[in-house]
Structures are given as C-alpha cells and as structure tokens.
Image (cartoon, rainbow, N blue to C red):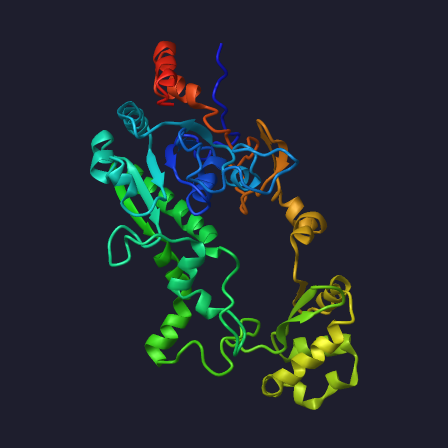
Length: 419
C-alpha cells in the first residue's frame, strides 16, 4: 500500500489547502507560515528544470559533504511542512492537472514576475472559472499594473526603490541598507497576512478575489515617518548629521549607539532613555568623565554627543561585551550585545526556551534544526516536524489522494514525463 501523505501536528489551518507555486523566500516564506499552522500546502515545481526556478533549491548551507537539489539548507528552512509535486506545465496534460488542483484548493499563491502566471495559461479569470471562490495571491516586485510592472526585482532592489536603503546608514557615508535581503523576509510576512485576509473575506462572504501584492509597496509602507516628514515639513531625510541609524532622535536619547567591545568585531548596544538612566549608567562607568556636569541633562548630552560617544567607546572597547551588558542591565539601563547567530542559537536560553529552533526531519538530509515561527498560540499552536519535500516527493500521493487519479493514469503521466 502506498504511503499516506504526511499531515501537520497543528489544527489551526488544517481545513485549508493551498496550491503553491511560490519560491525563494518572499513567496515560500509566506506559505511556510500557513503550513506550520496546519494548512495542506502543495508546492508545485517544474520537473524539467528540477525545481531550479527557486534559486534556493540545492544551494548552501549543507549539513555535510553531500550536494544536490534536495540537500540545500535554505530551501529546507523555508519549505518545512509542505508537500511537493512536479508538473510540467509546458504540456497540456500538465496544465490540466494544475486546473484540477486549483479546483480543489482554497487559495493559489505565486511570486513570479507580474504576468508570468497568466502567460502560462492561468490568469485570474481562468482561476475563477475553475473555482469561483478561489483566493489568488500574486506577490511581484511592483504589482500587476503601473509603469514598473514589467520590471524584475529582488529583495535588495525592492529596498533601494522603496526608500528603505536610503534611510539607513551613518552621516557622510553611503546608504547602508537594511541587511542583505530584508524585504524578502518582510515580503513573506505581508504575503502571509494577505492570504489569510483573503480567506477570512471568503469565509464571511463566499467571494474569492485576486490579491495583487507589490513587494515595493509593502516596503514603502515601512517608510512612513520619513515620507511624512518630507511631505508635511519639506525636510529631506539625508541632511547634515542625518541619518544616523545608531542614534535616536524621536524621542531624543543619549548615549544611544553601538560601541566596540573587547575582541574582534564584537559590539555592544546601549540606550539611555532619560537623565535617570544616565545617572545609573554613569555610576556603572565610575570614571571622572562620566561625572561631567554637562552630561547630567539630555540637552547637555545631545550637545556633546560626539564627545560622549567617543568616551563611551573608549570605556567599552576594553571590556567584555556580555559581562558589560549584564552590568548595565542590572543597573536598569537597556543594553545588549550585538548578537551573532551563535549568540542567538547557542548562548541565548530565551530563544531555545521559546522553541524557536525546532528539529525537522528531512527525507534525505535527516534531522536538522530550522527556523520556527516567532509566535505561539495557546490552543492551536504551530508544529514543525517535517522538512521540505524532496523534488516531486509527494507527486503520486497528491495525484492519488487529492485528485483521485488511478494507478494506471499516474503511470501514464510518469511515462510521458508530465510529472
């Protein structure tokens, strides 16, 4: 007897089935949330290109010396708890299989460039014809309409165009940006919310809809205060002394910065919220310069912020970041080491106690730690036990158990390389 399709240990979304053509992180990261909460997410991949449209398939990091399309750690991380099938959508029989899958799904998700899925034969009106109340969520760089809709992009480009990159950095230096690919992660979060919002609307009204999500617009929504400052006050973001992403201007705080600590590339963050914080921090520092009367008030510290930061760093850079942060926190002042991955995973009991690094079993990789979901629900929490699907791992099971195909028809599809 053929094996049964794996199911999730979570019941929160177990009534939902998602026909998922997403990839990378901005798309696959979204449906990971749904899968972890129990939705049956059926990931559709191309057998001809071995799933390589998703550039994360088969790329590092690896757990050992083995290599291959099923062994990439990043792909595994973003596709846990999903089922995986392959369909050659160049063939009419492949398109017909996808039509059948759409007809029994609650939502269809993809993050191709705008218009690609329609040109493959699946515009929204066709999806709606297949299932009247289908929720279709497309996540492209610039949305399906407008002057940039035909452009291709990635998270770092999205960040540059929406303005996030411009808003981060140190004075008189080029924009620093927000990490390597911040908007791939945030785009996934926005897309997950969009899918759920569409399904809630469907449940209330019986109506499906097309949710056209532009990742650049999602990033733009994170630039609100800077946009308002220019729109209302005519004040440009990059001006003398601005931006300084390590300092706080609203509310004004000082000292508020990242300071070098003892060691190679080790740092500590310290934020004094008010004069009481400074008095407690000065007592910890316990050096003559910290008792300077000009530092007793926020106006005095802001007026001498460069000198204060230099003195702060002269003090921190000879000290261990962990013990120093602990001493400052013990005095009631916010402080933290600038954490490395090792700090967060192996040295932080908070994240491990929260269950943020579950072990998932992958058919070929084996047991491996992955990112969990950063929320917990008291009654219907998420569950991550299964790793990402190997290429086409659940093809036969989905064709048989979800689409109701018989063994002879499945064999024929394999013979003709449709799946």
